[in-house]
Length: 392
Image (cartoon, rainbow, N blue to C red; front, side, top):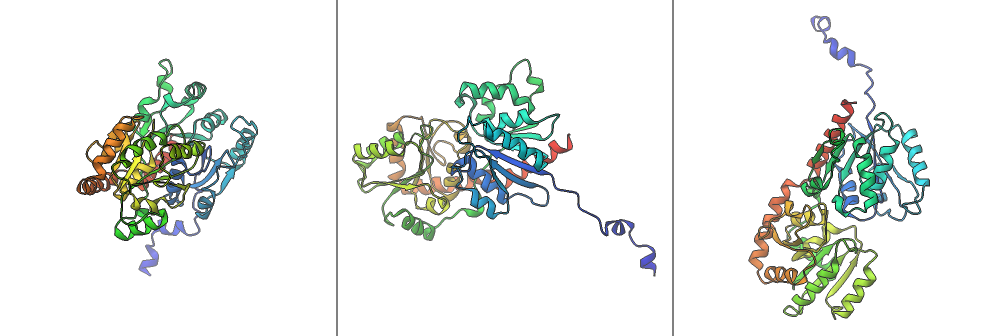
């Protein structure tokens, strides 16, 4: 009796209570092909708190759809806006309709063109626009930089994937006070998916069609001018003279594949270079590399480099963009200037000829990437969602 008389009224009030609706968030990007930005979206979805947010994804280009099944398998609705090309105006109408009928509280943009469009659609702060900047501003075309600068103040919050990216954002002097704050959130690898050890190495070599013994250099990235695999091929040709059994694996695809294959033929490397294609098993391949190389001309913060470091593979990378924020020259690997095949070849040779150095640098990479955890980055991103919604 006494218990019923003094029952907690707070508990009684919860009986039959209806949970408030979760805020609806639309992730908006250009495509869902196998690029670094897209892999961050897919990986980030794994750490999304479904009790806090209801997230859907929209993308422009229908032929860039490699990650659509993976997102849908996680129960995330994916909308293709069906742009035949970026200048096709019909996707803008479809996006406007989706945002209006979907009742989204936040549109989180990940590429400049869809971002500019979403900002122009927002009226009186609805929906709230959050933007992640993945690239250095000077690398954008002048029209993109101009449109960005005109609309950037409509962002409620901006995430930069590296300090270099944040520093590249140019605030106009007259409107600097109205621009959003920029927060650096270093993304990283899904550390749960990392594979290491002798068994992982052996299985990777089978996938790569490479012998278990012998040295293998590998890279992951789309075949574009930005990634500059041509410099890597020129460097590899130098190193291969002293290591005729050395193998190079190029994981990726893209518009320059035919040009790169011609270069392999011209350099007489056809028996040493493996074009592995665009793959969805990168984590399974990385343990098969003795050295990972990234010969990019420019970068924001490359996810493939973070994944290689987390796997324990020593790296040689261009000292561009956010890369020096991740690895130090001589600690997790070597940094070289972009477009210099001789410097790249020298760094590669130092690692290939020193097993103990490879082991120590690989261990340093594992330790370093503990600070670049995708789960932690997603936790901070969701806190930003809470912050911008509470400030409305």
